[in-house]
Length: 248
Image (cartoon, rainbow, N blue to C red; front, top):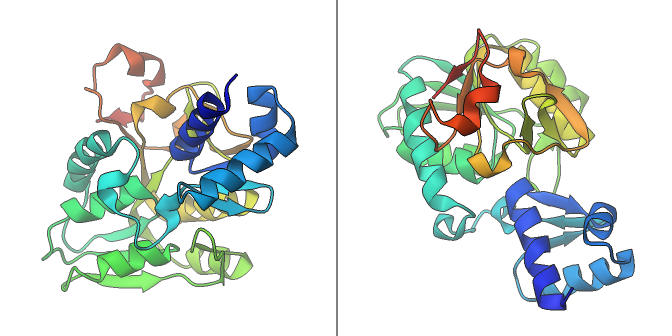
């Protein structure tokens, strides 16, 4: 495999799942970890990703990241339009981070009077443009790369919240394995966010369907809404149908 092709596949994996481990990339691309590290260094120097210990993150974690450059931006705009219909005035909403959530916030009317709880600094700052909304940042130890707070203090604070809706992106989603992620602290926080809410909506581009990360967040039976850019009756979503799950 040529270096250019390999680096294109690396970028696709990172853009699709927001992060990737060097060890996983090494296995999937059948090259040494040293080769992957050199590729990641080159891509980081070119400004295409954020290099971190053990792997890399998507640049979408950065505050000044332009939404127009977001991976699958047109699909995320469709998802955002659908998801925005779930958020009503006076609701208590627990909301995560990521480019799909960022696009959702752009579709929420600026005069919305909902109360939002988030662990994402970027989400909190973006929501501040909604002058009538109340924005509560659930603080803890902030990861400098993702700018998301985590830890026991965060989980403890969510235990005291009784929200109407939890809105999260998905790193991986499968009809067998449910919602999955690659980072244990992220998984623990997402579980706490869901537990603090009456209902949960998962937003994901269809390209992530049938993908599985290392750690399970929850089963599909534990979510209430699955929102993709596809039509609800799309054949690609047939295996995801559940009695309590509304596909939008």
